[in-house]
Image (cartoon, rainbow, N blue to C red; front, side, top):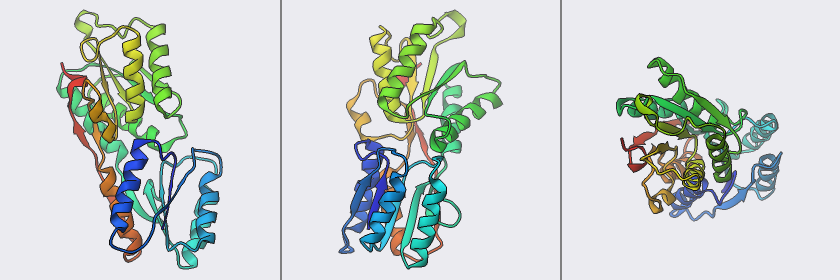
Length: 274
């Protein structure tokens, strides 16, 4: 069985890979992993390679929104017609089995919890506009704020990485004094659309002399395992990544025609303490 991820070094994808490996443990099958590093056409090339190896199934974990998606779907259709089992994790199209993550609704649930805690000031640090996962999370979070009568103060876009989170947070803090608490306006809460971006934003806040959560609040999305190594503990949306890896294997080995929807759970921790 083949597994294609954007970046195996990203804890989000390595957790999915670990779950898939665990799901295959009793099957006698081996898992081969390809990491695309988000390079153009890399997913399609990985699919072609796995097809040449005559793999029984190909799992694809990662966001959509790239200009080679149609080429990828065409290859998966051909693979499926020849007896292969493609499974997509994230935003699978209707014609491909998979696990869909309810990113928009899950991010909205986090926003609702933060509003209940009394936060009134927000910015969002998101990935590039074409990255569907990041866009859905940012929009879900913003929609919940707007329903409560609150307009986010800014939405920043950049690389969907730890360094991207650092650079966007650092630039925002350099360009405005609004991040600091100012009387009745309250403390700013920063929502990052992936946990690794949150860790970058945390480092930028510290480098700017700010303390989390006393001066500024931070939250992320995914609940990657490495969050356990950070202080303060990070508020996030928990996505059961290893379980999703196992589910994708279960779908690949079972009867065709399965689509499973997974919703995230807000995890309120020290980084948003009021």
